[in-house]
Image (cartoon, rainbow over all chains, first blue to last red; front, side):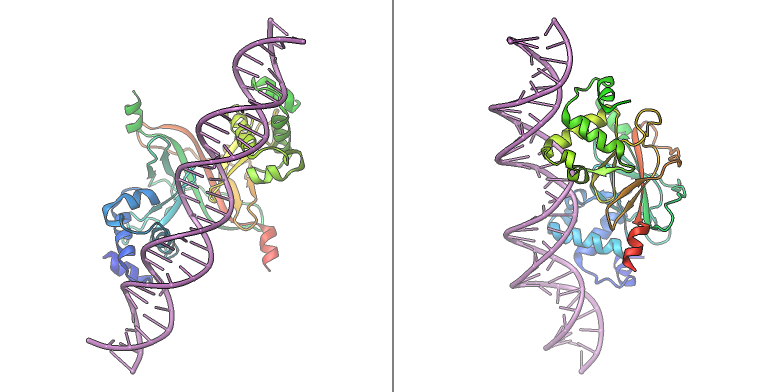
Length: 139
Length: 139
DNA sequence: AGCCAAATGCAACTCAGTTGCATGACGCGA
DNA sequence: TCGCGTCATGCAACTGAGTTGCATTTGGCT
């Protein structure tokens, strides 16, 4: 399924910003921050604001999932789009040295009981530390 | 155990900022954001920067634990100081309507396997939605 | 009391993210 | 395929959390 078709299926207008951003995210094996996306050549000439709004609309449409790391930065992920859509209900690992986040797939988030009467919108779990590459670089 | 003694036990100078902030946090039944703390009369005349630095030093000393909500704001918690110290390894609930966070105590965070070679510094899980009070207020 | 290191206060700054508004482009119907 | 309304984009300016540098004060210790 093409990214353009996915946009249409969700009732979103197919614009260059959306197709490019969605393609970048779908290709990435991990959640990307706004900054990382705008670093890609395809998105380099996009306005910051447009990128933010694009990510918001993709997120609302359910095409990407969104995680906010312990560094306070939003990251967006669309890997496994289509067939094996990645709903995002798994933990994420954030390397505090290089800032890369990765999905810890195949591990479900536990069910958690919340205070009576509360409505749950979502949940996220972030494990943080230093990734293997950065540990090597340290030594 | 008095908050002043706790500071001393951790090798921290006992200053008004630290004793007041620690007392506020110890008394609160939930993690407080910087803004909520400075709203308390005891901390009202503290400089923003001092409050940030105070929270950082308390956090490093292990007297408080720190959670960053999906709203990107740091919250600090010291409830159950001393005897039943709250290590923070439980999930937290964040109400996106009123911004209040609460500790979901008695529920352990699951063990999660991370990529080989990575060093884990910490982990946090945040459940978000709307709390019972805010749901009532909506209706 | 007196000293030094550590803590405080102030000002200015960074950086992620948002808002308002004018312009441009997508989609749809004629 | 043309035209039009609506939504998307770009620009500028703003917000709010958090940080940094530096001069001043204060806690702890002798």
